[in-house]
Amino acid sequence: MKLLHLPVYGLWLVATACSSTNHAIEDAETNSDAGAPLAPLAVGVERVGGDLEARVELLAGRGVDGADVYRFGPCSVTTALPQDYPPPTPPGAFEIKRYPRARRAEVTGDSNPNFGMFFGFWPLFQHIKRNEIAMTSPVEMDYDGFDNRGRLSTVGWTMSFLYREPSMGSIGKDGDVAVEDREPVTVLSKGCKGPYLFERADETARELAAWLATNDTWEAAGAPRGLFYNGPDQSNDDKWSEIQVPVRRRTK
Image 1 (tube, rainbow, N blue to C red):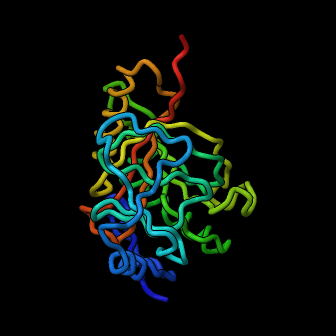
Image 2 (cartoon, helix red, strand yellow; image 1 turned 90 degrees about the vertical axis):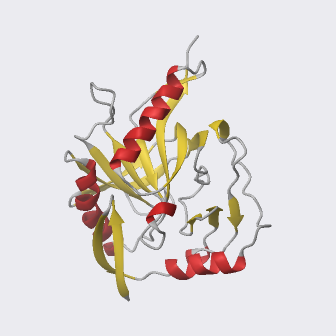
Image 3 (cartoon, one colour; image 1 turned 180 degrees about the vertical axis):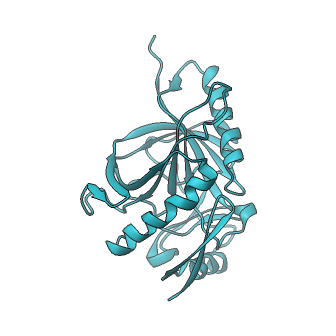
């Protein structure tokens, strides 16, 4: 057992937990090379803008508890993704992605999201610890849409830890935590590199909205969300995330 420092939008939490993330990152760096295989675009993923040539490296089985490692330059994800989740979008790329049904432990609030991730973490962490649910990556943060200025709203959020498989556990309430099944969703996503700051999420969400405003095929079908892949083992400058907007095909 050791103290695990967990960053949330620049704030630091301390929890007691088992972790092998540091070793997984070190092993991935030691055992990888410039010839590491590239992860193929997953079924249902389309590169539609930004860096069209960027490709993610796949290091099979070299992550935490045998998870696959995804790497793009100094960015890496070493914790298992939920079942059938597509690989993370490389920073600077825009993709249309299709996500399967997923079981999530959720906490909802109406404070500023910078503080929401601080307060939302503890009940979620206690829930997965109490129910012996293995941690996955990413942590998801659903936002409450855009305000009347066209900026990402700061008045509502839902923070989620994802179960590895949708058949694990059962839906229902566990104190302040609600376990829900999120239905399959198609999104426009931009991969990001850098600190997990709400201001960066807002900037990227507005980029996605601008892309959709000039696109003839896709339109927004829901509020933006963030996928945050890394903990403190990764430097702030090299943290990997995605900001996404649910989409649907435009009717003609």
